[in-house]
Image (spheres, rainbow, N blue to C red):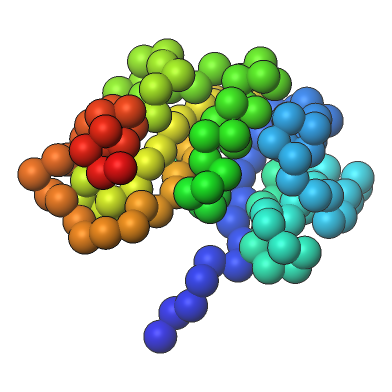
Length: 149
């Protein structure tokens, strides 16, 4: 049986620009930079637990991908605010600019989206306590909080 995801890789147009974004703006820890192959490895969360590789490639080799970063529920609002304070525009599930996270009731989990410099769709997500509520497929975070206080 498969366990947790250990690593994934995405292609980026300009390595240094992406390193600044993932390192300085998102706070990921650089594990290794390999200049000759133009790749940087970042650890997500604990050291050597989950890794993201950034590979510099020509623009025609960039295919937009989606990555979701899990955060603890008690840190979700602060992490979303930190993104915005770092100049990152947050979006809703439909790609519209929005500071209001949304809840997927069928999970349940709260989430907000944003893009990296190459257009990869990134997400922070926190699992919510309680049973799934499939009838509440997608609702605003503040509405969920009012009914689940």
